[in-house]
Image (tube, rainbow, N blue to C red; front, side, top):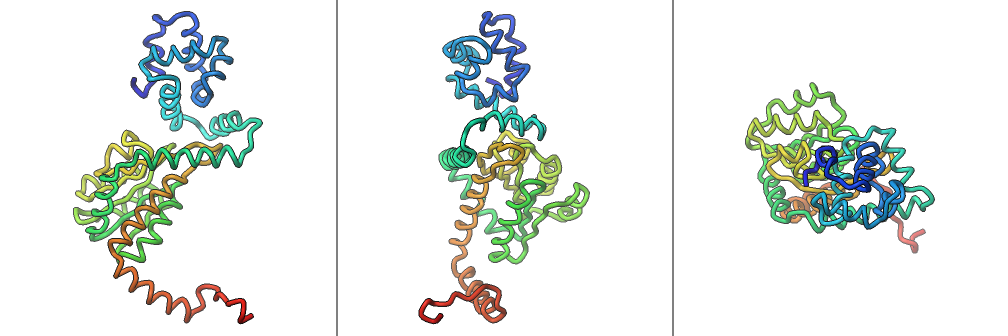
Length: 291
C-alpha cells in the first residue's frame, strides 16, 4: 500500500461497500484525528462495527488495522499545522495521565528504534566519522539541541567539528560552501521536515562529502539524499516533538566513536580534569568525613 493512503481511498471509493465508504469519507475529511484513533474509536465515530474497520484495512492491502494506522500517522505527521498538532494531542490524552502517556510513548519509540536500526549502517556511519577530515553537523529549529549535543562531545574527540544551527538558509550554505570528499556531514531532520536541512545535505552530497542522516525514515526528504541513514523514531506530543529515540541514537554514536578512540579520549580528559580542577570549573565534591 502506498504511503499516500488518501489518494488510494479516493481512487477506490466506488468499489467500497456502504460501511466502507463511511470509513473512507471520515478519514478523508478528518485524517488528522483518524490517524490516532483505535479501531474501536474509529468504528464508533463512523457508526460501524469494529470488525468492519479491521476488514476495511485488510481490503486496502494492509496486514491489519495497526498497519493502516501506522501508514496514516506517517503521512499525517508532516502535514499537521501546530494548531492541529495541539488539537490531536489533546484528543489523544483526554482523561489520561499525561506523564504515563508521554513516557510510554517514548519507551515505545525507543523499542522500535532499537529493533529496527541497521547495525551495519550504524557501523558504516561510525567508520565514516572516524576517517573524516572535518565533521559538519546540521540541525535547525527543534532539532538544533540534538546537533549541539553531538557537537559538544565530538569536539572532545576531533579537532575540526562545525555545528551549524539556528542560521538562515543563506548562512548555512556560506558555512558549508567548502565541504569536500574528505568531509562528513551529519544532518538531523524530523517532521515537520526542514527544507534548509534537506537542501544543505543535497549540496554536501553533490560536493562529494559523506552525508549521514539521522531521521525517522529512509523515505523522508533527508533520508533520500544521504549515504548512510540512521532511522530513529520520533513522535508528536502536542506542539512539541519527542526526540528521545534520536537522542539515544546520538548517545550510541558517541559511545561507539569514543571506544574506537579510547587512548586519545583518555589523554584529553586527563588534561581537562587538571584544567577543570585548577580553574574551578565544577563544584568540588567534599567527602562526608571532611565536612
